[in-house]
Amino acid sequence: MFLLTVSGPGGVEADFTVPSATLALDLALRSQRAGCFWRLEHDDGESVRALTLDRLRTLAVARASNAEELQLIDQIEWQHELQSSFQLN
Image (tube, rainbow, N blue to C red; front, side, top):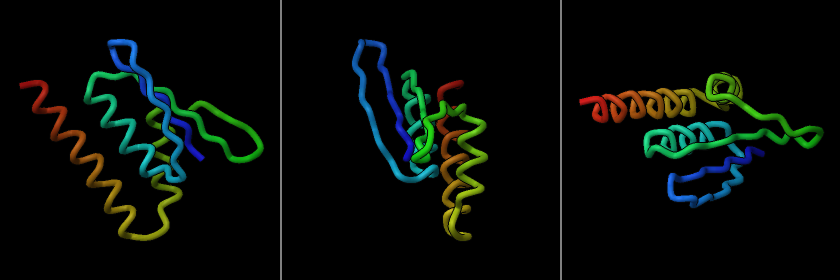
């Protein structure tokens, strides 16, 4: 399980529990683009560890169950880069 906590600038906080590293990656990147702070932990049943964005990306690719999920990860990354470039302009 992945435990994602998103904090907005106005003090609003939301917690998400998701079973997939791919979904956690998508939520973390969307939160980042929205200007929110986020914290992610991975609970493997034995321990809970904080994850960085780079570690989450690596984990999502490693856990992808098929070619379609790898393509989805590529699309999530592409969408993030595209949306981030809009913010720069």
